[in-house]
Image 1 (cartoon, rainbow, N blue to C red):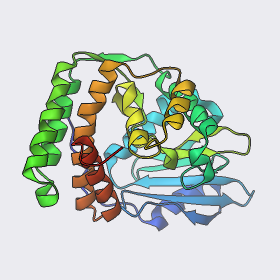
Image 2 (cartoon, one colour; image 1 turned 45 degrees about the horizontal axis):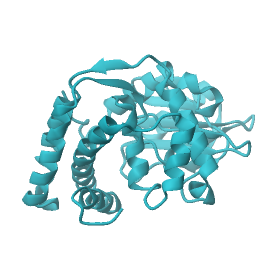
Image 3 (cartoon, rainbow, N blue to C red; image 1 turned 90 degrees about the vertical axis):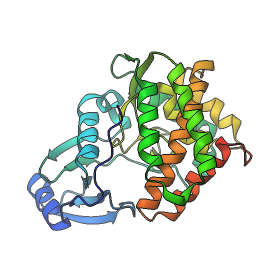
Image 4 (cartoon, rainbow, N blue to C red; image 1 turned 180 degrees about the horizontal axis):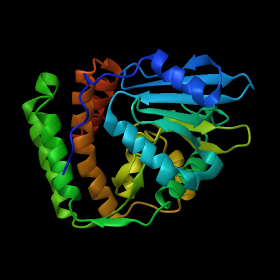
Amino acid sequence: MYRAPDSVVEEIASDAEALDHVHRVLGPVDVVADLSWAHGEARVLEVRTRGDEHAIAKWHRGGRNYHRELSAYQLYVPALGGDAPRLVASDDRLQLLILSRVPGALVEGSDAEHDPVVHVRAGEALRRLHDSTPAIINDHFGDAVISKFAYWADRIGDAASEAKLAIARRIAKTSLDLGPLPMVPAHRDNSSRNWMLGLDGHVRLIDFAAVEFEPWAVDLFRLEQREWLDAPLLRESFLDGYGRRPDERDHAMLHAFHAVSAISTIAWAVEHDDLVFAAQGREMLDRLLGETLY
């Protein structure tokens, strides 16, 4: 069954508290960049030690994201080797992770975002994450989709019309026909904003706070909604790297997943006053309902 997100009013540790712990682990450090997102669900700082080594200090507002990310770094991310950050230390009280800083620059917003070779490499890296542990068979995927849809639909208010919600709800309910599905440790925020490209050509994955067991094709969804719009070559390149293509059942799963993702994106963005993310959610919903072109 779907578990609701942590409360948005949960307290987050102060910079002073978190950096004091970082100092005790790494020695004196200087903050060289604030990489936090505006939504405030986590603080992310790049720090530099006196030995000129760089690290990432990330601490979460909500316990759910912290424990998901900690578990991912302990159980699944090591399969990526040097193509992902390494967990240096953690603190449950502060919900703090200290991570190695992987080399390279974000792919999002750069020419590399449109490079087929980069998408091949990203597909290869994602496959290694998915294969880090044997898949499990879950026959409750549809129940979770319906539960998640109901939770977010109740919170969306007037941000989406009742008519659109009704159509999206019918699409979400098709997930009940899918039957048991193999589930893998999915990134669930797989897009160029979480890819780092190094000078060596390696694509490294970052930000594992959303990792949960899902059908493998869930990790295609964000790319389908952003980077791959009007870019079929990038899609094919990524799938070449991943080594698998969606079948009819995967497409049916993604159609139902699209419905719940659109509604949850809109509702979450409205709650967090994120106008850009809300607009993206509405575009997702319009694409689902055939009101805009892919």
